[in-house]
Image (cartoon, rainbow, N blue to C red; front, side):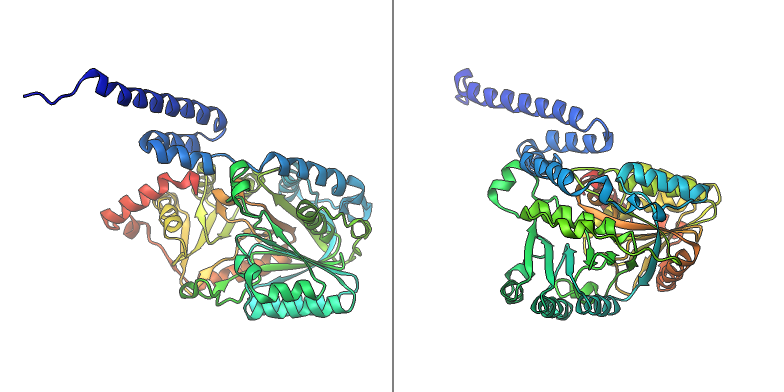
Length: 486
């Protein structure tokens, strides 16, 4: 009895296998060339491509490359040439120049090199650690606006907070104030479909969408590149940045993780010009409107103000700035380093620098939410805990909601409040921004807020963590292998 298998019947299958092997081999070479600066990421993609023949290829074509699109890259170059000119920056005014101590100067110099924004003095700051207070202050500033209100959010929800701000914008537009609202297409998709969005437009508020998602764009660029910035500028003098989206702390899409706990800084002074430049660059990218008059305005210098540096990153430029600045803080800290973030999936350099800082005697505290809204990210995050705990890093799990604040304090001398998480998405893919504040009084205020988070957290014990169930360890390690892609 024969099986009836002949060479002629096997030949087509063999051809398919050869073609598949050649395609995967070519893709592996392509990954090695394109990801040469990130061996971890390259190895993860090679495993996926070889282990999942068709799916791995599709995934890489969709999200393997940081493709912003040729058209958008040209638009960004044009935006920089049009909007971002040295003579309009805050540092063009010599009264804003500051002299910083050695450690602060090193961080400031690095941040300027990788984010193209110098430190400027003369700023009054207010730390806001309550979402309702943030909304109330923003509404009050919009109501007091005399020229314009510029708002950029990743998430805008049509909830109580969203409606309060919308009503303030409509009141301002009715008074003749130029109101511009820029929202991310994915993060704010609920708002964009809600009647309040149409009402804003019909009331004279200019609403634009960041990075629209459609089939055509999917073919030329990554659809998961998002504008994660939170920027608000009122009359060019007052600005906000931090972690607050435009949403209630109850956060309707994911109520079981609520409340969302955020932190934002309100700035009055020259540094607001840097936030204005960022907003107008993004606005120009999406609308082709060049708002030149607002670029000419110089915020008032506050004689009793403090030094602030605005940092910005994105997949089209400076996309390594966040990780470089964070690592510099870990290397230069002398006594105490506290970091809070909702999503912790760092690169190996960040993990190593945390371990080294703890081992040289620095008190390193990492504060994360106990219950994360992303199970995969939470598992990948926990895959790093054992090595960090062994090195002496103190890990605290906040269990009074989802800790969404992204903050860092260094020796109670330097404070960082930003939109970026300590994960690969913020490091490499998202458009992000934040503020570095070189002032011990403000850093102490932020340190006090961080202590509130710690007081509401559960500390992890290194010995107990090492004894966690085997299945949990396997799941976390598997998720950790995907860390470079998260």
